[in-house]
Image 1 (cartoon, rainbow, N blue to C red):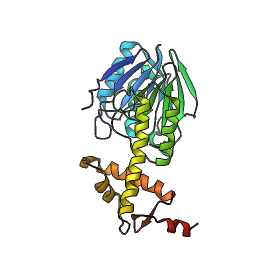
Image 2 (cartoon, one colour):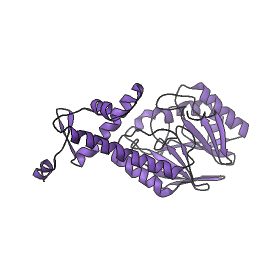
Image 3 (spheres, rainbow, N blue to C red):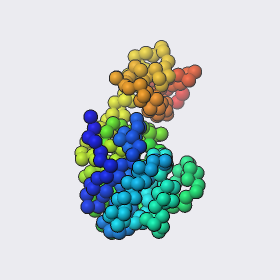
Image 4 (cartoon, rainbow, N blue to C red):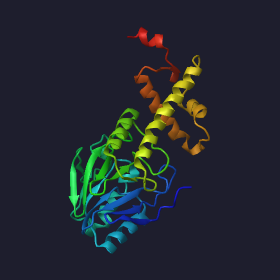
Length: 290
């Protein structure tokens, strides 16, 4: 069982974690949001989910107790459990956010917060407040606009949903996601603070596990289709045959992940699609199309 995450945790002199109070199958114990810096004006990373007054009250109490105003709000990506609380924070905590800038990376989903003024982040951009410098790294895959934020002073990485504190992440584009994992590995962070789940104290091992897990899953798909060459399967069929002891409530997410694997394998000409189902692609079929 995962360790219980307190509602508020002072992780270091530079970082306070506030739990989003929105537990669920995909959010684990809830969305982690982080206040970063040591001075009066600090940075908030992610805003939790909309319609969760417990979170707004928690955030307000921490800002008030610590004497903090927000200089910047960074959104790691457009998913509702990371950006959904933005309007309430800006409206309900006006005294704490009146000189605050909101930032996220451009996305095709940027129409979801039309009522808020949001500045666009750039890959490699740096922001500094007292006690903290954050560098932006665009890490698409989980979503097209996903970013991680590197706290340079402590070599700590805020990983959003690219890497979780427990389990593995879902993604929109497996090719991009694998490249992003490789880019994060190159940063060699000392600690990862994820968007969900507890602190990752062994980041290199965790990243290696994520990469090897995806490669293993891909190999399982290829081997299963190869051993059933005269049959075709949809994503649900493959999940039932490949995943062991999968809880029913995670089946849809598993099907989505398998689907992304299949798209990647299709591009690599390792599988083919017939009548909305998937089959192993023979080598002679590949040669005949070259």
